[in-house]
Length: 259
Image 1 (cartoon, helix red, strand yellow):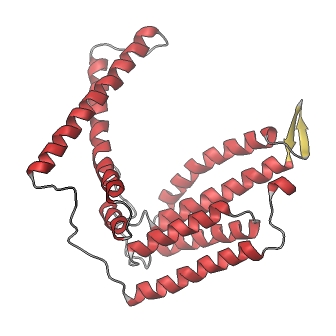
Image 2 (cartoon, rainbow, N blue to C red):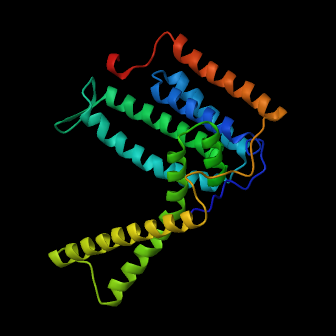
Image 3 (cartoon, rainbow, N blue to C red):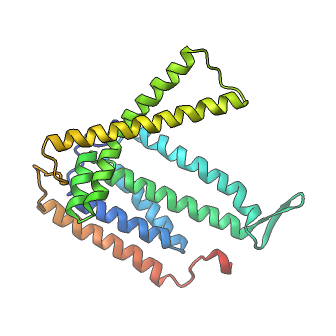
């Protein structure tokens, strides 16, 4: 089960209003995603690193997550230069590695790392219940919020169900091989998992109705803006304006299509 390892701190970012953190992280991510200039991407990555420092979350855990996403980025550095048409940088046998493909891989790497770090520092530093409450308060559709909360709760129950089924077939001497029997066994396993998940979902819903559930979760604790939140709102707004201005005013957007 996810331990919410980053949610227990007491840094300045932990004390910011969760609604403010979610909105800023979302706007920051959209801005970085559509950015085409390297100065904006680099500034965004630098800002996200500063946020990681302010959040005071364990760097070792952060690096584990960064390694995962950069493993995918490493694949892009191999594939994009040889599949993206453009000015050849060098040749590997019959294949030409294009400058545009390499630039695109660098852009994706900068953006993905910046977005990952900003979400780790601002969103991963709150509990899932706080996240759901904050999403509800910023008028995200309730059904989406409830779906997220229940999925978070019961995905681990389904994992336990899956592990029990795997243990059961192993006890019966099952050894996975590349043959029809193995494929059929795994098909039965996932089919049974789907049946049990459906049955459990129905039981959970019936139990919620028995406890008076009427399609709405009521929150005991609300949110209120403090002086720290007001200062944070001003600072984070200025950051977004600065990044947007860098993107808008940059005279030479580094677009891979016109390099």
